[in-house]
Length: 311
Length: 151
Image (cartoon, rainbow over all chains, first blue to last red; front, side, top):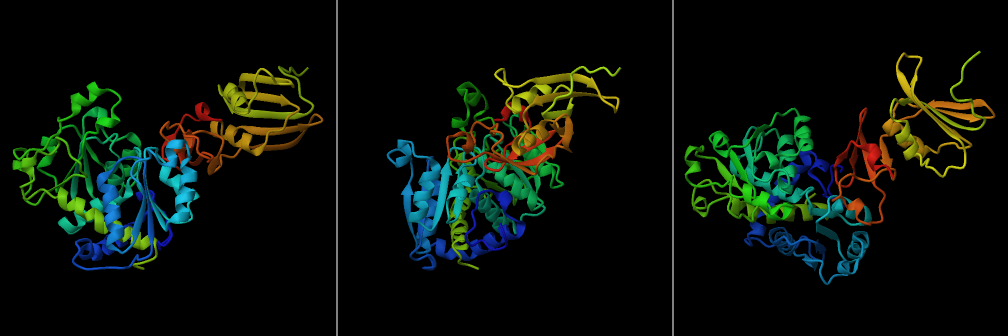
């Protein structure tokens, strides 16, 4: 991807330079009052977003729709492939070519890794990856970075502790790559069977960083500036017994937060199950609902940039 | 008198300096099976002039195409190709590991979109040549077991 975003696909954080990420975050900052409904915009008036969700994802789908609507554009698409031509056996390539003809930008969530890259090959218009299987989820990463930058004044130098399902969790792979690009200190906390994949760690080390690997949240919590919790995803486990064994083992409670720094923030891509106790919601550390809101201005920024606005 | 373990061939390809132990994989990737119509000679664990060991494959009446050479390079980057015409070495060169390869290997990730009946050819960036590591341009997964995934 070159300096300009216009017409570009957003498939993986690896495609983006640090300058481009900062550009997205800066534009997102400008979008906040529009995302809140305090200001109006018709920047994308007349533009159509093709929203293809082959897997359910309430937050990502709705925030993209909200983003497009707030900028004056419209959305078409489906939120499950059942009933769509996909269920009749149409290839993703054909579906993409069709929707590409009906819209100006495509947002794709798909269970297969590499689906968004493939879509990018077949679409003339830009494709934004909204998660492809266990692969990349760049817009989540961008909103996570936006949240850290907003709450901590910057990303560099912060100690980010990432907890939970690091093996299957798609958000943490993209996030850890981006955080390493920005020079954050990283600690990965997970049971050994769910630790960060070897190639992800190698990628981070190639940036000159040495992430800390731990299996104990309690041990690393006191030194954290950002605590990024993730759900242990039941659907990623072939064996239900293994899920039962690890679920709940990494749950955050108010008592655990006793040793935390005063300005430490807790983030979570949501939805959560048991990994953050509701009693944490009322503490000054909780930022996950702000984080969820931040998905709207960040996706507004991306839609605006790839469609040639905000340049 | 010079001793020949295998006699010279009149026309065809001699793949020399194959990494020792890789000859059978070379045969598999260039599609030599039991139903060949010309003579194929395989030498495994042959002393080389460098004082080490190598494998050699001789295929009569066939010249390998560039795609086949790419495959050989991936599993045996020092192999040399000798094209033989009328008992003479008409061409001789060392295989070259390409920067990118397309349609010669499937992605080792079963969850990759390229394994799902889509109209695309799997494509990889060669991240390391020895031992080879190929990264799928679609799913980003790195495959190191090249011979197992060649098509």
